[in-house]
Image 1 (cartoon, rainbow, N blue to C red):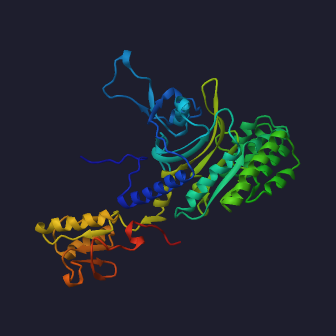
Image 2: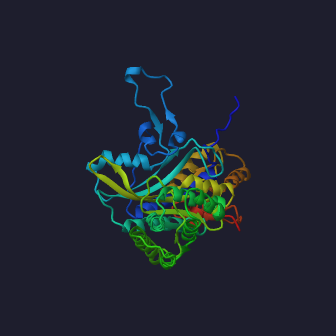
Image 3: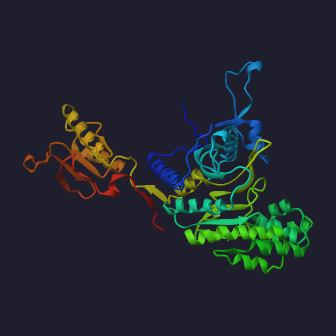
Length: 448
């Protein structure tokens, strides 16, 4: 039977999977360094809850049902696969509020599913990595500055080049628009959000069509053009001559975030006043992240502040969070061949087998090496040593171990060969140690 691939559901080859695992390990370890414990939520939610996000969510949801079907009287509520980690997290907070210590922080690394058209960097099944902090009633503003610092640290540890976390505060455009007499804040934001796609001239025309004067449209574009790596964005906004209390609140909040970034992650955060995102529920600081030199890829890490993450009708749980599109980022990096692994196996050493009668000896050697944290594999067949070396070479293993090949007079009965250099030396499985860079696969960046 012919196997037909299903588009939008990526499956990595072993070397690519090693790159993915490295990314996930770095992300998880950094999240935990910042005190974010891990949770995992179920893959399905009631469709009604998923649709509660609004927008075009109904077009994205994969429904779940039993092929055998249920009797009408016992049928479960209609279920769907979650299309992000925010909706299930909100439900998790409500269900477990009595057992959580607030402010509650968590990290979550899971698969999500979206029924959108697959393309490079866009999938129907993919991995996201989220962090959020939520509290009861009110959330301290300093968390809005701390969240992007975690991501800046994550990306500083990954071999991806320079990144920029673009930060804005939704109160800045809201207060500015109100200050110039524009009342349809969301509608205006939706149009300004098209700047990267259609350019300022067409955005200005759309704003005028929406009822703004040409002068108001020009002022909206002037605000969106402000981008600074320091606090000078405040003076540039003030120079536009607009005042409003909401604008003041936004400028103060964004100043805290950028100031914290300047002190703790210089160059990683920039104030970019065109960033809108999440118009349905973000209420304060918003984030988008781009790779320098690959801005056309768009954002692969985004989030923001939401004052109504979850509510049970009596208590509201505001929060702030940010999410890495792990599969999106890796799909682009691997697809463009910008990253690769130094080998396609975790094994550092292949322990050769002279014949089947001596396999037990080779297994004992492998056991000794593994006990000291050296990943290894025993050769599958007692072929000629040249073939066993080629087996290791094809998989990228740098060393082949030959039991019984050493000089007993030297106290070492084995030898190990570096198949890259050809050097072969006596070795003892209880003491031999490879260089640190050889112990585990290395993630390599393509030469620019």
